[in-house]
Length: 175
Ligand SMILES: [Mg+2]
Image (cartoon, rainbow, N blue to C red):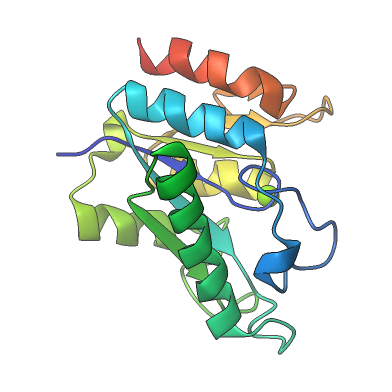
């Protein structure tokens, strides 16, 4: 079975769009710190999957085709420029209360586990919001919250910034 690190997208992979949405690839700003983290994860023998809430689709703000274009371009940039790969990118297009995939529910992680034969006991969820942590826990993963604040979290580990994450990941995944 595979072991996997699940990543939230906005705020972890790319610069957070704030309260809005990344509507076009041209507005998608890949974080160099994420590239370092993905390299660490890959070096440690884990696959990587992005799981992203994109309810802007349900609200008619985001175009589904454009969301998929963003993810295809992201994969291409990671492959071509960094020789890195994502096993999968899964997004939830629904609004709240309409599905079992929108985080904090674990549906996207469970779907990835079904598709790719992932061992959740050996896997991790990394995100910048508590709902990412809840989803990871519900799916049976260990969890890392990336957050500057000192708000209480049920995460197994907390990291203050993306800059620290690759070092922490190398340490945690090596255990
Ligand atoms: Mg986020």
